[in-house]
Amino acid sequence: MKVINIDKEKWASGVESLTSTYRLFGPVKEDDSHNFKELKKGELPDLAYGNSKLSPKSAVFPPSEAMFTYSLDEKNENHHILNDVKKDYSPRAVLGIRPCDAKAVSLVRMNFDTKEYRDPYWMDAFEATTFVGLACDNPCSTCFCTSTGCGPFSEEGLDVLLVENGNAYIAKALTAKGEKLMDAAGFKTAGDDSAIAAKKAAAEAKITASIETDKLSEKVIMDLYDAPIWDDISFSCINCCTCTYACPTCWCFDIQDENKGLSGVRMRNWDSCMTPLFTMHGSGHNPRSQKKQRVRQRFMHKLKYFLDKYQKGIMCVGCGRCVQQCPVNIDIRTVSKKMNDYVAAS
Amino acid sequence: MDAYITKIKEISERLLKDGTVEAVIGFRQGTVPTMSEPCMIKRSDDVKDLVWDSNCRINLCNYLTNRKEKLAIVAKGCDSRNIVTHIIENKIKRDQLFIIGVPCKGMNDKNTGELQDNCGTCTHRNPVIYDELVGDLVEEQTDVDKYADVKKVEALSSDEKWNFFNDLYSSCTRCHACRNACPLCYCPTCFVDESKPQWVGKADDAVDIRTYHFLRAYHCAGRCTDCGSCEAACPQNIKVRQMTKKLEKDCSELYGWEAGLTLDERPPLDTFKVDDREDFIK
Image (tube, rainbow over all chains, first blue to last red):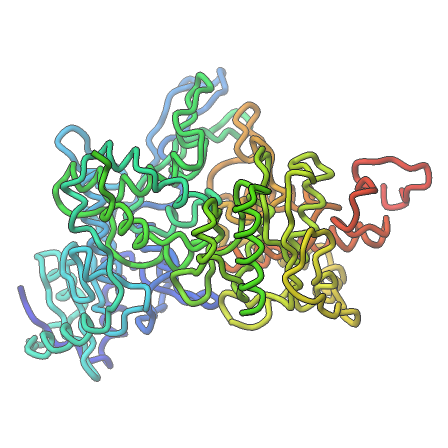
């Protein structure tokens, strides 16, 4: 690990230097909120932001992604053959990702990079990406990252952590990828990370919200599944996809063929367990036809199935987006407390 | 508001205790300052959870669709108009419902904390149908220009309109919160979810996104009460009412119709009269 001092005055020219080797993604202000976008030439990431409305997962997992193209024209020699879509997996960097969102990327990786399966699209994009994080000095009131095994200065999933310090950033280059990016930017001045501990403690102290999960691992799955809590939890849910699309750890997708005339594209698009179509079988049977089943699935996956399967904590990093954006105020912290407190009748 | 809350609790407790209804649909305290959560109270001991404040913006009629039990529902002016629409569209029966009417002075915008846009031009703040009121009727607004923003769009050229709607929906993620928060959107399978045939593409193509918004708006023509639930639900803060309001305006101008005011008349788009206007058909 290398500590580098970046004078803020040199930040813009450093970012400019990166553009010759990296495609850059960063927070950009749109109307009244920020989102991660590929930066245009000369555009700087707006690092004066709280957190982005949608998570930066789109940098490696776009909402819609072409996988194959094909022709249905039988006069065409290769008709009905799927052709790979050529992708740009040249080096890319996400600048200014928050530590919670970076940890989320490492949680999602557990799903896309397993012994049995390697998702080529997600993994190729992930491997091409250098994650440059920005520590949170001013967490939002809905942030609860400190109780999800993360935190405003967490380094998990990051290649570089930037800590704002007056007129400079203290940069911790945490991986070889991170060091390479710092070199490419021309950031070489040795720095001192002694100021970080106090800033980290101050930021953590600002986080007053939390999620209760301590008893979830000892619960029996079927007890929670059958618990009489779900009618009340799910009543208000309108089954939109707001929570799943905003969530940095939601990874589900759907595959669709889109034809135009005699040519077509096989796409994958973000999907959501909140919709009935998500589990609709070809037979017409739907194992999760009821709203209650779908709401239960989302919370059981995040707070119990994932926890039991990987033994790496819950599938939530405490970014608070779902809490802020749910149209009917379903709050994962309340749901987790209900699950955590639930004791099955013996 | 406190007097409203006391009355809502009092009526709900009475109805649950005497068995008039099996449950009460209302709002409970939210977990963030700008939100209240729709809830269903089934036990009289739980009526203490019911609240009423300026964050009760989601239209509760949405939770009535196809329910079979006897229910009480807390309803402000717009909710009550959607209940009327629900009754005439056979989604609920009048005799299943005990409507706890709430005279309303408007909800707050979830982002700005100021009066919600649709509430600023609302002309039916009092419930149009109810069994019991929680307070005195409030004065209705009469001197409002409901359609000032729609008129601005109407005045644009075709190209400008195209750009206007393109920009309007550019941040749409197709989460369908607008549809799902809408009491009118109760189709068993929405056209965007149909797969045989698949009417609309599923990717992030701007044409597909516009198709969804336009068709949804047209399906609400003559039924929309401008309750603002769609806009309140949208996580991207898209002004989705720009389309539904245009159709509301058309229904008003072409048929003199305002949705959800009476149980005794069919809406213009499910009836035919020989003197119906047709000069707009080209």
